[in-house]
Length: 495
Image (cartoon, rainbow, N blue to C red):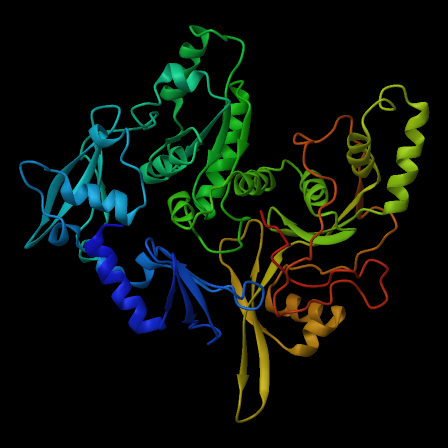
């Protein structure tokens, strides 16, 4: 952080939070969420403010989001001149986006965009196909859009890559992450991930992949291809086109995976650049993002249930697949019996114990659809005068475009039968929730796998407490043997 910017930021932080300087840290700031003096930040780089009460509070904010006015008009603070014609663009990328300029200085220019009586400096990147993309960097909220593509030019079928990521180098990579934004691609490359930008989740880079295929054929390892990791932004469009492009690329012979910052439908909508600013692109985090992607592109409800079990080790749990609610059960005794049966099977008896356990779980596990829709608690409301209260829920269907929202009483959430009655009356066509059952039948789906899951390296058990929201659902009937997790929660991973 430049000295002048650091001085302005520190002055504001001291006035607002009352920090105490302790060596390289600012400590004992008052948290706006829990009011405890637990907020801290680095003294020389106070980019991220965090509350130290991680379990009980967990508040955090990036200083750029907290004081946007300090990062909203780069041309005022950093004026371009003959010796540095990209001064404002450099500052925006380096201090506003936290990106290293090493290797990319020749990839962009500083330009100016005018709309009526207002204007803004821009940082502009040249794109394949003769076009360009630019981001407005001086109070972009004044304009109808914050970024622009060159009029009349098309980037369809191409991707943007940092200058050092040439096709021959990409051909030799183990993985290539295909994300949406140019800033995201730079941020991932800064952390050691080979990444390119598709510029939009709607753009399938067919021409770039054709060039990559030629580079692989002409390279030293013509029989080895990089794995394509589709890493689009969080949201409905990103999720839909991730699945679509994974299927298309696999048909073309590419090994594909996906990555997502959060499980679909959960958490904050942060992109890869946002995560880099928050120091969340370490190797351990990347594994989690790949797993989030595996969940997103799971081919069947059975595949998704198995992936969740491999990572979390839950005996039974709710999850969502294609906007339908499912219940999965993995009985330890059934898994043990299945493993024991492998002693007489020469095809699997020599597998390592971890592989046997995963294979046995796929054979012994049970998955059952319990509702043909999904429901999410949005908020709780209470009338202080009358003491009436209710929960406001949203109901989604697989094919219906319009979401249905309505109120549910506490009684409806406390009893499965009452919840079902209210759901059917609120959302015509809804069925469920049906209490899960450990017995197999026409409504249950059991499976036998002919091979381990695509990602068999996931740990079979992982100590975890299922995160929950404030609303409890009575999906498992009272006394059900599977009523071990009965909450509408962030673990109900959605698709």
